[in-house]
Image (cartoon, rainbow, N blue to C red):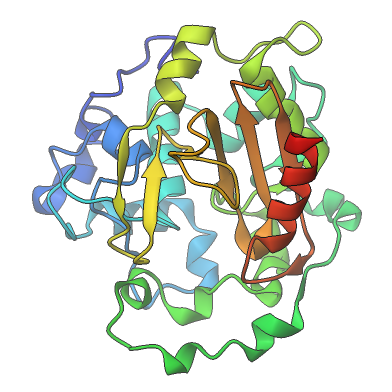
Length: 295
């Protein structure tokens, strides 16, 4: 939406908006590379604590001072934590507003879901949230059996692995962490619907911008997590249980614990599934989305 308004282009270098980000050879990273997970900055310091995650300025300073993992644009790898802070800081630099405020003013408010779609959620609203819990399979999942030198273990400390305990913390719920939205499935589905078409007089993107934002931008083997991956500009391509080649018009993102949301420009379907019992797979999202898309 901000690109559509001309506040920056996809090929604008991040340093034009955020000069400090250019440290240690990152000056060539573009907005496009930040969006499609090819920027080469997937890691946060291994001493980062949950309290640090809640400190916007501290996290942005750490990311600005980070070393590149690869030459920007040459590899793709999921920027699990850093993506949200990088994009959020670009939003702040471009608009002068925190990303939660921009979300509220430009998306949640106009769509009538301001009380259901948050990044940082005020403590006064926490009583409305479902309490997260870990599925039994999660508690039995043995991370120690995996090789300790895997890139995924270097991207973030294990104390920040997204468990129910972390997600239920009051400070985490209140914090402006873009990689940790607090939302209803209804609100997310409504957002995707308003990307695809007009919803009660609101359309978030014109058709040409939507096509550009959801077209394949980068693909390959994920350099952090090791699986094949395909990304548009901020969205993964393909339905759960499918692939980008099989369902190239579907764009969305899977979330912690098996949640998933997408829009499909070919069918006009907007889908969202949220969970409070966190699992290590997308089996439920896959089954439910297939019931919807094939029904």
